[in-house]
Image (cartoon, rainbow, N blue to C red; front, side, top):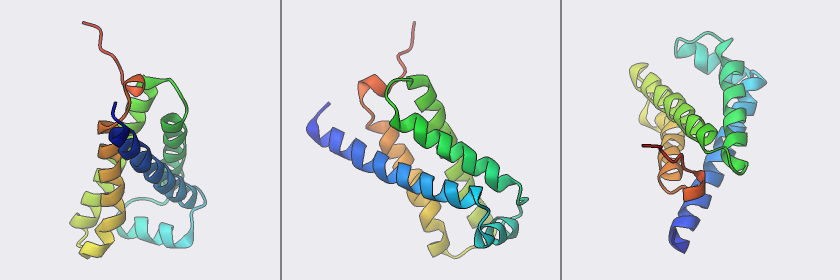
Length: 126
């Protein structure tokens, strides 16, 4: 892995972890604005602590060493959550600027996954 790839990986992973941590905490605390937003998108408010918990666990899985399979699941969960958030906003007719946070986290998820070091990848057995 080149030095450039390591930098890209750690910058994208750090921003991804920070974004997921902050949104996860807001969702766990059921901040009033977040409850209103998710209700407006058509989801029940009890969905917030579920999403928040998964995000916090995903951040831990990404940042701790080893456990490559767990990291793959975290990346998949982040991808599903952020693509779902992006498309939910599109479907509800939100303006383009409202798409930015979820789209940014989706892009960071893909970049972090793509540039992850070999010791953070699942090795297939054939």
